[in-house]
Image (tube, rainbow, N blue to C red; front, side):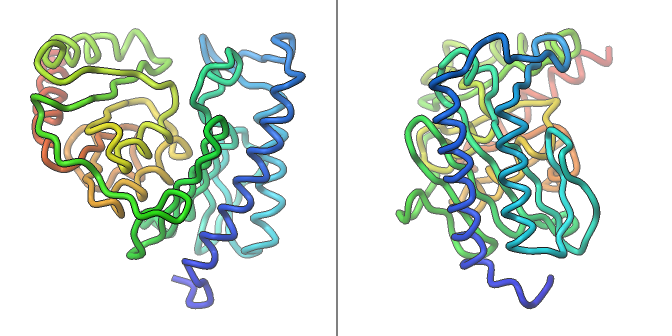
Length: 269
């Protein structure tokens, strides 16, 4: 790791940048028109707001850590470096378009497979979740910790990625397995916020596949620093390089992984 980086102070600086981007998004939403929406893929949307937020974030991060590269959802910046910023300028674009909460800015700093810091700013509730490696997880200065719920009382979040044909058998199996056997099941429309809600104990478990690194990188660290567990769908903790995430309070991780593996095995039959 670049020894000149003070992770705590860097994280606090990134919180300010995320809030600035959130303020831009909040103001643009007041005058936003559906005519501004572009379709990237089927049911996968983007607008000038996503791109404007990303340009604002990238510019500020370049000043903060000039030598770092970028992985950004909208592709306005890229390039390598010992460290790399992973940026989702507006996670939950479909929610944003429909004025449906939540939607958020997500920023992480990655070194290899190691997530050094993560910040998620939820715009509607004006909440900033953040963590740095070894420093704990926080919501606006208050420490976060995952829940201690067991599976029978758990509130789970299963989301619906755009790869509907490939994922439909998996989500059906998860619903069949857990619906009526846990506290309840939700979908919130933002991977970054689902992870933060696990970290805050508002959710007990979350699973989703076909994600981009920008969707889960910051939130994944926040969950781990809050005492939770994060793996990919195969149960590996090397999730930063994959496209799937299972995040829980740790107590129910195995139940979710068992159900996911069963659904994946059925697809291979």
